[in-house]
Length: 135
Length: 211
Length: 89
Image (tube, rainbow over all chains, first blue to last red; front, side):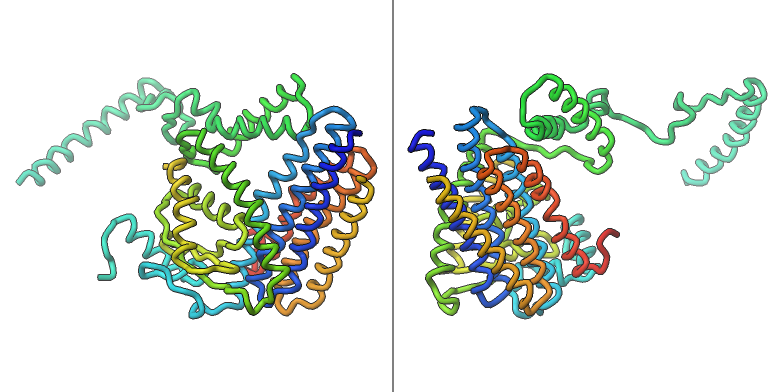
């Protein structure tokens, strides 16, 4: 194989390895769960994307065909990583955080995780009628 | 005094109609032709032919593309099976998606995705630097509130995914009336600047895509 | 040159998996452990892909694809259990 293509593949693999390492390193270094969420969900996903670009170039150079499965893996990872980060944040807020530590949103209702069912129904009815029900 | 007259007419009209009905049922036997022609149908179905057999064309297109990508090659047989799956799956699951999402200007989708990819790569490098080379006490983590202008669920989902993919921010919760978003930032200089960045770069573009 | 890069990649992913295991063992809260499991799944996908590049065959990508598609469901199941007490209502 050409030396430049080999260098390109090696560069992508090293870049991916660096991001995966940094992602997990951030998970053990930072003090709180909400800070620890940032590392794995973003840096690790990008690292796997780097590996996949390297593998696409590798299989394109050796076997001469373009395989789309790597793009599909990256696509699935980019779609599901925010979902898991959001879920973990929400479950942590529900279990550990008290609502007084968070800033309040504009309007009269709090955040969705702490709201009761009556609050949500009242908010929906107020939006539907467009008027102020509680005065 | 219109109300008693009306009831009076109605009470006079009803026995006549009942008499007529019984007369009809005697005359025609089992054939009780009421307003609709299908005795088994319990509700009205106003869908057009296209809405019935191809309820979500965008979903069909995405399913066909996904099937071809799973097969990892472009063959006619794969296309035929993909089309068959793409037609049957939306029909069987049509009750889960009552309305089609409206997407204006598909070219803006491509530009938005390009900007997203660029931001993901560049900002990841900055956050990697902050994670490795700064001590955790120096990081300025904060919870911020982003007021939203978007209303449709697809738009809010797109904005949440974008904020979570962009390194430095994780979208955590939505307010109970759906008007603001709770975001956790890893290292933020000023809160107003971060809110303005999110609104300028991402929300304005999403608002142009989803009405 | 690719062999050196692959070796470096294997070392990095293995160290990342060990760090996830450490966080799994000593996370103070439950969600720390859930996060560690989810990150382990993604690191395993990376390991499978590296192995596929090293052996120069494309058969391992299907298993990586399957793990990517279904690996996040375990995290969603754990979180739904913590949030509502029930995984499927």
